[in-house]
Image (tube, rainbow, N blue to C red; front, side, top):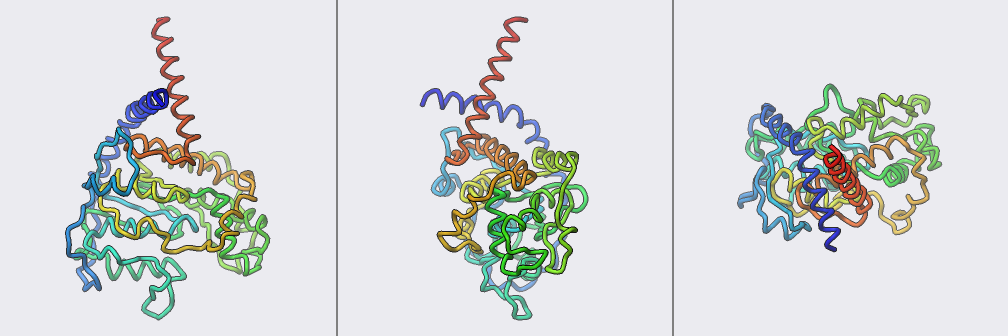
Length: 357
């Protein structure tokens, strides 16, 4: 136990030392971002009247009641002034609930953004995400409800356009993501949405990475499969990975498969209150026990591009769990061990170099 604590302490100091400069630059860059010019106030259906913890602030007692913190936990959130939500399909639409409530602290906490019972003005359900968000934003994202110094932007399932900055996103184990997407589409049995699972994965491999480099990942039933399959160059792959690794481009990376911990980390980094529905899957797609484990049959080699992105996201996530004093969940202990061991070896090499010198 003592050895583990020492390793954790070394890693915490190292991460803070290595990334601290980037964190300060990130803070400065966020301060330079101009706020969004919001539409004129509109009458909203529900407004939150009681006080809430605002962006950039953290109620430590409330936070610790919901989030597993470590002894090194220090509340030091920075207000997020730019949130550009990049949302690969099947990585957690529910994250929109967190972002909307963060940007709009006067909304009712029980107002759910992406539940299926919501209807568009034409009476249709919210099966298609972009129209729903457009309708929701028009109705609720107003100065009456929202902090006008927080710029919230969503591209639904669209790719990054222009220079990426302030990106917030969830990244998912590509096997889970592919299986969930296939379950959603496979009954179509079209060339663009084949009923065979491995054929489907072949067409849509690299989906999460595509969005970061400006490529689409959703296609209509009539799309020629030859226009869907993607085999990027090494340069393009490195470009996507560099976006994840640069704090001036990505503000937050969560893991769909560690949902509660991701929500905790988001609020530890940026403050605000964890509202009731943020830790719930308010738009589930996998509903049977059989489906919950079926993704395990898929080999990691079936999508090498998103697997690289997922591994990079796991490292980003664990580093920031350490930086902000959040307990590392069991599924990420392998990353924690590699980072701690690597830092311990680095310290020893540095010590040996100084001794020889």
